[in-house]
Image (cartoon, rainbow, N blue to C red):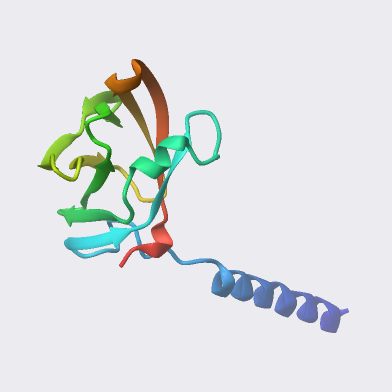
Length: 152
């Protein structure tokens, strides 16, 4: 009886050790990463599913991440930026215009910056698209999902 109990305790202990050894370790949280600049892959998802949005092709990869004092700012470059009349991200419960960092009108690109709470959380965003040549205007809810494992 003692031998069976001892064996079951050893098996249980071994299971816990194995579980923690095999669990993925994310080094991409702001608490773990030192202040500095990093890059990370990301995808633009549709508002209501984890499916890639058509908007994904208008966002260059990877994103630039800037960590300072435990806070994360992401910079992404928008392609065909003349079509994107507005880009807002959810920041502390309010949608705010992303800060324009740079604009290259000849390449039709602009780089914007916004706050990110955590690299493991999805960032809700709103984008307005206007294509005058075809008379198109649309407003879309999208979500940005960073790949924390890709941070370098």
